[in-house]
Length: 253
Ligand code: G
Ligand code: G
Ligand code: MN
Ligand code: NA
Image (cartoon, rainbow, N blue to C red; front, side, top):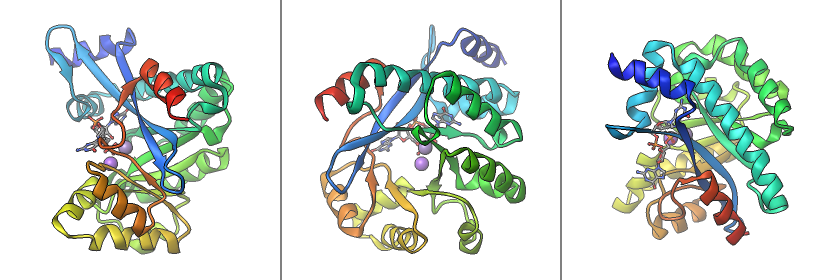
C-alpha cells in the first residue's frame, strides 16, 4: 500500500526514468530504433523492476498516468536526439502499452504527444502484448485501427506466448511481431522450430519481426539466417539512459 502511494508520487514528480535499448536491422547490422523501458529507482529500496511496478500501476489505476509519462518522455527524448544527432538519431522508438491503456483515449493521446513534440507518427511503434490483445479482442481492434489511422506502427510483444488464434492475427492491423525471448533462448539448445515458424509466418503475412532477448552472437547469426528483420538483446546493446543512448548512436552510425 505504501508502495502504491510512493509510485503515485514518483509518477507525479516524473521520477520514473526511461531507458532505451537499441534495435538493429539484420540487413546491414545498423541500429535503427530503440525500445523505451521504464525504470524506477526508489530512494530507499533501490531499483524496482517494471515487472513489479507495472502490475502495481495496473491494479491501482496509476497506469494511465504512468502511460502518459512514458509516451511524453519518450517523444521528448526523440525530439532531443533529433536536435543533437540529426540523421544519426534513432528513427523510431518502441513504446510498451498496457491492456488498460487500450481505450478510446489512447489514439488522441498519442496524436497530442506527437504534435507537442513535433514528431511524425512513424517515429513511434506501439508494443502491445499478445495477452493484452486477447483480453477484449473486439475493442482492442478498434483502438489499433485508430492508432494505425494516425500513422503509428504497431507491434505484438511477447509473440507466441499468448494463445492468440492465427486466424485472428491475420485481421489485426499490425506491422511487426516481436518473437518472444523464450524462443530465442531455445536456439542455444538446438531448438529453432518455433522461432523459425514465427518468422516464416510473419513473412507470409507481410509483417516484420523483431527477435528479442538475443544474448549470444550465435543466436544473432541464426536469427539473421532464419530471416528476422530486427534483433534486440543484451549481446548487442543494453538498455541505457537517454544521454548514453545519444552518445551510443553518435558512435554507432
Ligand atoms: O525492462 P524490463 O525487462 O525490466 O521490463 C520488464 C517488463 O516490463 C517487460 O515486459 C516490459 O515490456 C515491461 N515494461 C517496461 N517498460 C514499460 C512501460 O513503459 N510500460 C509498460 N506497460 N510496460 C513496460
Ligand atoms: O516484454 P518486453 O519485450 O517488453 O521486455 C523488454 C525487457 O527485456 C526489457 O526490460 C529488457 O531489459 C529485457 N531484455 C532486453 N534484452 C534482453 C536480453 O538479451 N535478455 C533478457 N533476458 N532480457 C532482455
Ligand atoms: Mn516490449
Ligand atoms: Na517481449
